[in-house]
Length: 361
Image (cartoon, rainbow, N blue to C red; front, side):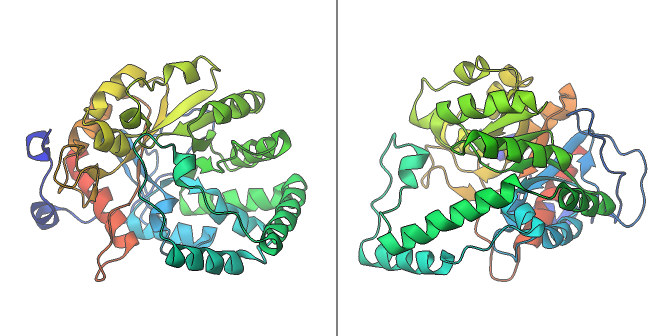
């Protein structure tokens, strides 16, 4: 599975032949269908990243090294040529006026001190994502501060001003950008807060809310997604590689509202299996795909993020399959390879957009 065999260019050849994106856009997507829209009206002042009928977007996590906030995200989209996003909820809630965490800096400092004193051991094969993310127990005063903050945030969420949400959507609409997903990751929240997540995402024009895949999250979120006429969408990491018996099928059985944010890079990097096998099998249940380049599990540096075109992930195969089959699946760039000091995450996402464009047009 070498990119040279899959029409993928080297970065040098790509940069030498890529055509700069014009400053063009489309009208905001409608909200009646999950199918990515084909541009109906093109102007010269808004981004457009639908190529050959395949909607290229980005998860806003890609710009995690840049100043946060919805207005900033809009700027990054315009500079990258992106008109469709999986919106991280932190950027949205910051705009909506979520209370600030008064102990955040203290907790971060304490965590840094703990890591310096006793670096965490490398993750064990077969460990779950939650196990990998476990942190040591906080001192009582910091935990009390977090508990109080969580109560304040809950009260704020349950009394959210929906007019403010409408103004947030208007900002995106005015810029020609659609949030097709809002990533609240609410699978361990109380039901009324999960309901809040779906209501706000729906008001933003999104079709669903994402979280990391797991039995409890699926069972909690799916019924509430159904009540809101939305999708509960679940993202994979290395589960398929860690456990050969791992399958989407039990999650599909829970509810018609269950959909998947298939991370093709994580899947390929951990299994070495061509992602198109999964896409073909589950195309009617896959709402979106995270696209990235990676080495495979048998490389000298296995399962490692790479600049697009320098890894083994068959990017072109994935994009061309969607173009050929006309499946309404969003493809979101997730920028995870290290950004060089002479570049920025915004420039790199723009380069990825053009890379996809050169494949699809």
